[in-house]
Length: 179
Picture 1 (cartoon, one colour):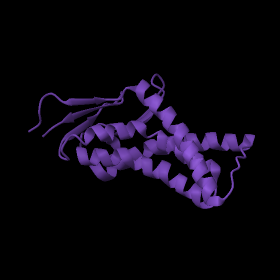
Picture 2 (picture 1 turned 180 degrees about the horizontal axis):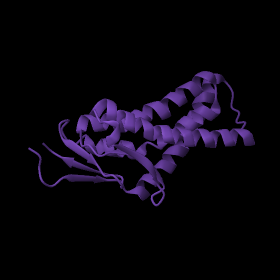
Picture 3 (picture 1 turned 180 degrees about the vertical axis):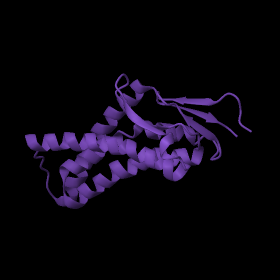
Picture 4 (picture 1 turned 45 degrees about the horizontal axis):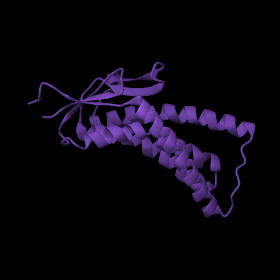
């Protein structure tokens, strides 16, 4: 039995943007220092070409971040391809991935965090391994970019794994129906 009134989890985009900026700065500094300590050198060399490559890689990884949400919906929530949607909300300045199918809370939490690992942690680890400051910093930016996903995850932890979660198709908002 599903309750009539859902609990609404809504992102405060101004608060998330501020947290993202601070977390980006902090992680970039920590990751740069950590990479420098691992490889015994403290140098930053970014050419104009590096800046272009960084920017393009950032755009590609943001698109992949959203694609991994979609993959998470399919893998963890058994969502069919036709029940998925993605795009960019220019008014809010965000890329989004959504599903029209309500998911169990356990599946939604997994789908929320999948991009953190695939587009943030993995590039960072590769960057540390091959001594690529650019990859390390790119990973830091993308890890910080998952701050909204972590906020929603934290809020979803308050509900049972069997609760149904409906993703809002236009806004960064979840509707949670406790079963």
